[in-house]
Image (tube, rainbow, N blue to C red; front, side, top):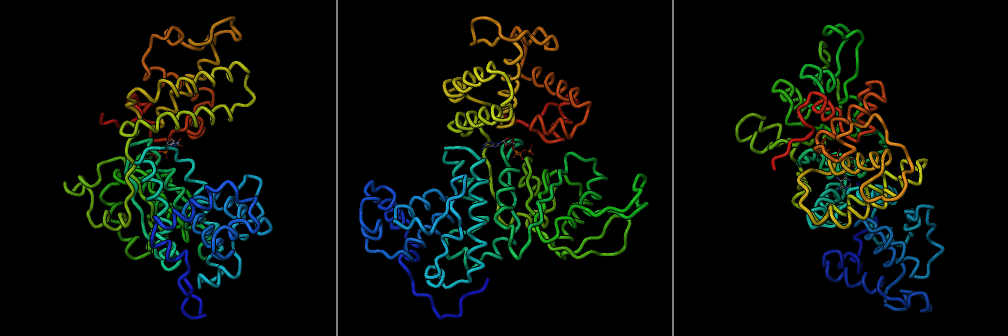
Length: 463
Ligand SMILES: Nc1ncnc2c1ncn2[C@@H]1O[C@H](COP(=O)(O)OP(=O)(O)OP(=O)(O)O)[C@@H](O)[C@H]1O
C-alpha cells in the first residue's frame, strides 16, 4: 500500500473520531437523526462546524463500516447532491465519495481508496445475505468485515495487503452459512492488484479421498486409472485469488501434508508429475467438525491448522440464536416467491401464510435444525401447498392434488425427514438424476445430497 509522499497527514476529525467510537457515533447520529437537514442552508455543514471534506471522510468511513445507505443519506443531507450519483439499486457510486481534498487529507493513494471503497460496497452487499438480528449474527458479520478491512480505517489503509493475504478458518455446523461468509470475505480481496479471479471451491467431504488430491493439486495424464488427460487443480485455478476449502476436517493425512507444503512454499506438485508449479493463493477453510478437538487428539495436523487459522470466525448454530429464525425465515420465503414469480396466485397466498407462520410461530419455538433445514422445510411446505390445499387455506380447491405426493404427506402424517427424503427424490427424478442440478435446486451441497441419498441423514446435529 502506498502512502502519500505529501508529508504527514494531519489528524482529521474523522481520524480522531475513528479512534473514539462513541464520538464518531455521536457525530453520525447528529447527521442522520436531524430531520431539518434539507431545510438548513448549507445542509450539515451549515449545522455543524465541519467541512465538506470531513463529511466525505465520514461518509467513506460509513461505507467501510458497512453502512453505504447511511453514507448516501449523509451526503444528500449535506446538500451535495452533485457529488453522488446513486445507482439504480440505491447504492452510492464510490467514485463520488472521492473528493480530491478528502483523499489528500487521508494521505493515501487515490487508486487504493477507490478499490477499497468498491470492495467495501461489495462486502456490505454480500453480508446482507447473512441475515440475523441476534448479537451472535452481528458478531459474525463484524468478524467477516474485519477479515477484509481490519478494525479501523487506519488498519485498512495501512495493512490492507496483509489483511487480504491472511488465511481464514470458518467454524460452524453444517448449513450455518459458512460458504456465504467465505464469499463475502473473498469479495473484500477481489480487485486487489487487479485480480478478479473467481473463488474456487473444493468440498473435501463430497469427493472420495483419492479424488480430493487431484481436485486440489491437479494431475498429469495417465497419473491414475481414469486420468485420460492432464488437469489443473483448483489451487492453480485460484492462483492470484482465493480458494474455499470446505469440510477441511475431512482431509486425509497425506492430503493434509501436501496442503501444508503448498501453503508453506507456495508451490504444488500435480499428482503424477515431478514438476512444481508456483502459486499465490489465499485459503479460506471451513469445517463443521470440532477441528480444535481434532488437533488436540492429533487426528488433524496442528501445523496445518495453525497455518489456516490466521483468523477464525465461529458461526453459532441457529438453535443458539432463536431471534434470527423469523428474519431468516421471512427472507427465505421472499426469495422462494421471487424465484417462482410465474407460479399461480395460490402459491402467493401460501407465501403469505408461510410468512405469518414464520412470524408468529417459527420464531417462538425452539428450532433444532440449521438454516438449510429451515429453508428446505419452508420450500417443501410451499411446494406441497402449491400442490394441494394447505392447512390454513380454506375454501374451494384451486389446484388438484398432485398424485405424485404420497398420501401420508397430504394427510400431514409423516415426519420431516420423510418429507425431505421424498422431496429430494422427486427433485432428482425431475432432473433425471443430475446431482449438481438437484443440489442447486435444493440449495444443499453435493455432500449433503449424497448423505441423504445414502439414507444417512443430511446434517450433523449435536442436539
Ligand atoms: N444467516 C443466514 N441468512 C440467510 N440465509 C442463510 C443464513 N445462513 C445460511 N443461510 C442459507 O443456508 C444455506 C446454507 O448455507 P451455506 O452453504 O453457506 O452453509 P455451510 O455452513 O457452508 O454448509 P455446509 O457445511 O453444509 O457446506 C444457504 O442457502 C444459505 O444462503
